[in-house]
Length: 135
Image 1: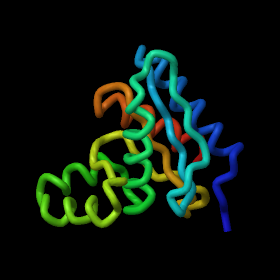
Image 2: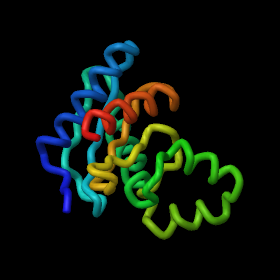
Image 3: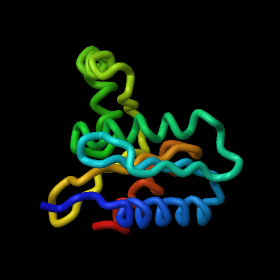
Image 4: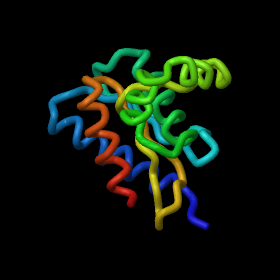
């Protein structure tokens, strides 16, 4: 069984931050394990203080639902009552906005990465770069 080690979390976060620098965006990055527990959080200079919590909410949604939050956001718009209920059931920890991506090793989801600080598209690009660095 694969696990998300601190070394893998660091690799994901560094890749996401590198992509953010390419995009000229200050980015906060959060990496969670498969149970939604914090493994790593990094806030780039110049990011707002809420970006870490937003990134964590995106990562939490991605690992809980085993899918990218950009897909969850689309579903939220199509069925707001269901997704709103999920948010309420989880104490508001789920954020249905682009920028959260599951991290898989050998086809098994071992955690997730969430990014916040840019547009939803920029956050998603950075999260995908981070997850891809582990896969």
